[in-house]
Structure formats: structure tokens, C-alpha cells
Length: 351
Image (cartoon, rainbow, N blue to C red):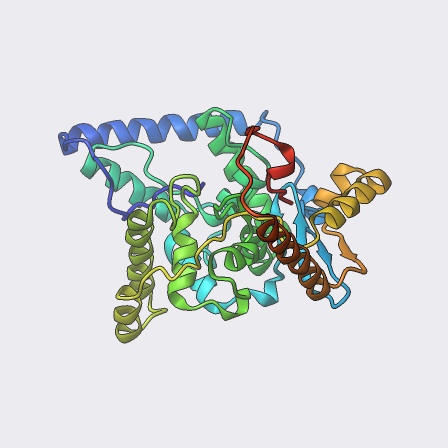
């Protein structure tokens, strides 16, 4: 969702044009934009920022066994919330270095970034170089402005950003940003906490510099930047983020060099399998849906404690499987007389 920043290398940039011609174009666009902004701001309707006080995103419902071990999850959006006090310093430094280095100085709109973006437009012959602040990205995502026309969206983003900055502290805005953003994955993980578990199988408090930089690298385009499908692209963007952190002073040259040389380090994703007790879990799901409704059990982040003992369940399933195999072996080979494709009895269940 985040756009390429002004000094990020462009891919496939168009040939340079006359500097004077580009300067005139950018100046004209700027004047039109300011005039349009002043005119539209007087009549444009923007969502109420008061709704941010009751932020209730979709959370993941977790089913636990009798020992408290999680073994099933259901959700519309895979998300775990993080508070402003839980944000690791390395994650804060990585996000701000890559997305908004002046976050703690501006009031929602970074005029300096807009000017630098215009300079890059002049030099490269490209328009629409990113100058969105972190607060503007949050406004665009939270208030779902991405489908609107570019100019009206930008004006709304700016107005909403200013209002958000008035209502929330900088740390609150950063925490909200890290909770609502899409970090990719299959299915998609929303928020840095869920993303950390998905990619690194650890708690967000244990993130390393390289891991924080990799998560930040995914933000501009979660559907295009995947450490599993496009690792080279993610590595390039991660190293660019590390370079920005070095230039901003949050990394020493030694730490930067070691981080650049490190692999992405993501965990291998396991194929989706039902795990133990699939029929028990399905019965629990049906009970939740009947009692609370599908929207509640998929979005309210329920904690469901059950009586199942996963160790005993695995042992029971293993005993049945081994017993059936032994019975089949004793009966000898039986030539197949008919093969039924797509037999539900042979299909693997998934949660």
C-alpha cells in the first residue's frame, strides 16, 4: 500500500526530459493541486475520525486443548493486536526509515517530502513519486480510500491525516498503522504481530534488525513482494531499507554489514493439514456458529477452551492408523476393481 519514496531507485524509469520543461510541468501541477485542494477542502466530505477511538478490527479466534495449546484458528483477517508499548525499537526504526523518516516532526503532511518528490519527478521524467506520510497511509487504509480518484483521495488523505494527528499521539498512530497494514501471506496476515508469527514463528518482541527490515519491505505491495514467491525482490527491498536505517543513524556500519549479508530467514511453510481431532474441531466450529454467528466467531478473536487432549488424540489416531495398516497387511493384496476419484472419504480435511 505504501508508495515508493522519493529517493528509492525506480524500476523502468522513462528517459529524462528537459529539466526546464519538467519544472514547468511540476509547477503547473502543483499550482493546480493547491488550487483544487483549497476549493475542494471547503466542500469535500471526509469520514469522521472519531471512529478511530472504537477501532475494532477483525481478530483471530483460537481453539485450545485441555492443556491450553492452540490447535485451530478461524478468522476473516488473520490479525493479532500490538499496543504502542510493545513496538520493538527495530521495527519502529525500520518502518520510519523506509516509509516516513520525518514522522515525529510533521503534522500529518510532509511538505519537505513533497518537494523532494517533485525534484525526483523532474530528474527522472516520472510522475506520482511517493510522498505519502505514514499517517496518510494509515488514513488511506483505515478509511478505505484506495478506490477513489487520485486527486480527491490525496486531498482526503491529507485532511484526515491532520485530524488524526490532532486526535492521537505519534506512538498511537504508529501502533495503529502496525495493526491495520497488510503484511502479505497465504492467507494474508494483518498487523506486525501476526506477520512475525507467520514468517518467523516468533513473538514480535524477539524481532531482529533483518527481520524487521524484511517485514517493512513487504508493505509497499504485499501481493507482489513475497519472501516465498519473489525472494529476490524482497531481499533487494530489505537491503534498501537497511541502507536507509544506516543513513538515518539507527544502525552502525558493523550491524548494517552483517544484516546485509544475512538471508531472509523465513520459516518453511507447512502444507495445510487438518491436524489432530478434525471432526472434534468441526463440531466446535458448528457450535460457535450456531450460538454466536459466523461474523462473531471469525472476527471477535474468541478464545475457545476445549476438553480435547491433543497428545491422547494423536496417540489414538496413530493406533487406529497402525491397526488398520496391520489388518490390511494380514489380509494380503487385493486387486483394485474400481477407483472412485474425488471420494470425500479420501480427501483431507482442513480447518
